[in-house]
Image 1 (cartoon, one colour):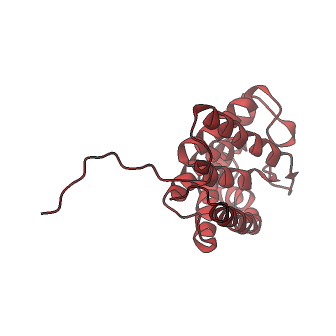
Image 2 (tube, rainbow, N blue to C red; image 1 turned 90 degrees about the vertical axis):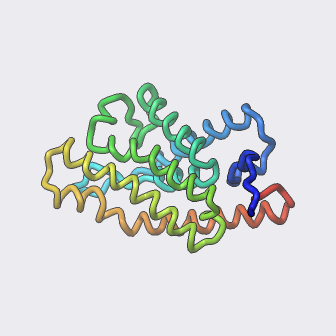
Length: 201
């Protein structure tokens, strides 16, 4: 008969777990994840007639999720949402509840879901190899579009075909490029962790 261990299961490790485990570390990392998304928002390219700009935020979100894990990753994006209610940290320097209720609000809410999804996949080891990491980052971005496109349609009243085109189709190539960048950065960071002899699962 196989014995069943009642010992608590060791939490899965993500990149930042190579750092000393303290509450101050976690607070700092959540803040850093939010600030990374703020920086991504500074890259904003409008593609008419879509009201949704191409930004660097989605890349920031999936990297934050992978590096921080699902809890801290989601918390970092939730913090970003809250900061944007009071400070001009959304794309194009926007802020306030009107942005959340507007055409791009669903994408912002999707950031929280995407960071949690990619973070969980990273905890399961999906960020260690480029091909698997690429798939995980694509999944995270699809989660953003899965919330953003219906929100866009409802908030603007545009036809579903237009919402899908203006809110998803025109972003496919950019999304693939961002996933490729993430798939190069995160596994490379893991290789650096291994070379430095830092803890990894």
